[in-house]
Length: 351
Image (tube, rainbow, N blue to C red; front, side):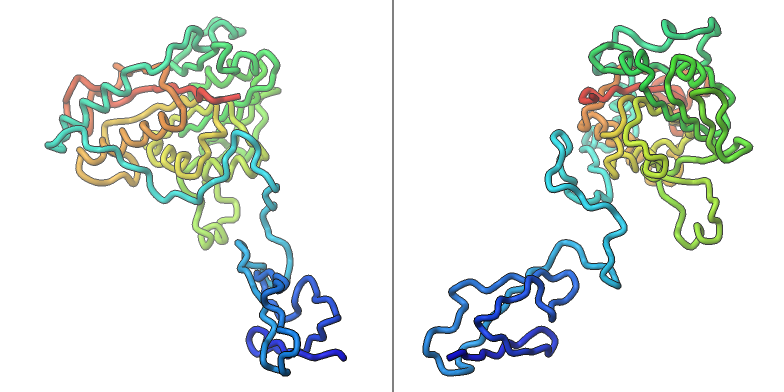
């Protein structure tokens, strides 16, 4: 004799299930985003129990992602079953960097400035072959000390020889393009981003592109983007996704004091792991765009950003103090500091 057992579903949905009939893989009453699991043996009604004395229990387990309306697939690609080696799964977004302890008990500008300036003036790793002088096809001098490390252990020289390197150059109206042209002439795929160029995308030569785009630390607000569909401001991570580029061998940036917030964004969104070498011109005469606080806390923030680079396995191999710029540090004449330095790091884990 076949016995019927009532099953109470979710949100008032109920039906009668006959025990010989196999349960469906997905229960018709299951909510979107909830996966159904068949009951275990310990949930079956005891033999001989009166009807209604025991109800079959159904276990629902909430999945990690809510199903979109209409039952369609997610707009982003599903991750593979296993994370590739060397790329651990992300633990979730970070909203702020971890500030380093104060340089001294007084929490003063002198203490913070001394620690910061000493840090940016001390190479952390030796590089025996710098710049592209040995690769250049012309004899014109380099106008600025944009230095890359060409030691074989860091792979960039190999990538250049095999015409497989990629350079991103972020600028704001600078006319000095000698470094980009030199890299392009040697076979690098070069993308220069500057909102002042006349057309959206210009192929200047076989390997040199100009893009009317500026790199920011945030994407435009959706409401603003809707009014300006051709907005020319993006985060670097967004640009990489749009262009279909996973890796950048060299990232050069001269952002006129926007570099601090852009660098913070690269750290928080884990874009750094996609970059082989960094060349940043940093500006110290004022805090920078959207960097606020007392002078000592600003310098502590700067220092904390650079320590984050170190924790991401970036090592400083070259530092250049620009004596042609005003010798100002947060509008003060202290420690014989310049208002502008060019710093070069190499990702020691780059493959």
